[in-house]
Image (tube, rainbow, N blue to C red; front, side, top):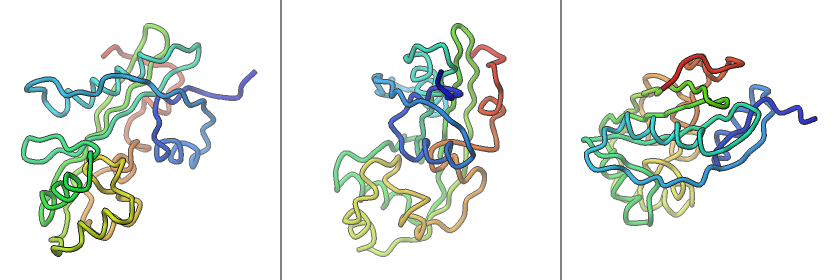
Length: 188
């Protein structure tokens, strides 16, 4: 019998590291879903839908944890950059201003599911012209929402975090009770 407490429906090594750091034992089964944004979809609704879709996609007798993180600024969702140009554009957009990082989390067990969206405000200092390009060269922005990693080299761009530090990395650890509960309690 597996000592796993749940299944993580994510490829994110950052989410797995956060969960392991607090002692969870889990299986990893990434959910292969369509992550396209629907026309005129609200960012909060989008990140909730992604977390729910991931949690529902994986079938298991164990609870399934799905999560998704986006960066939201000026009404736009900044996902993972597709190339160097887009990553630099993302960082230029974030330079010298505040943006929101939204992380949706869903926990499902059979027909029952609970979800939550945690919003964190992050303020970037003004970046020098060459910094975004040099940052891309580190390789870090490739698979990060908004093109930066708060837990890595990208931390040098951040003046202030208002809210959940771990949610910006990919999973709010203190905020949602659903991560700490044994059985989901509400339907989303």
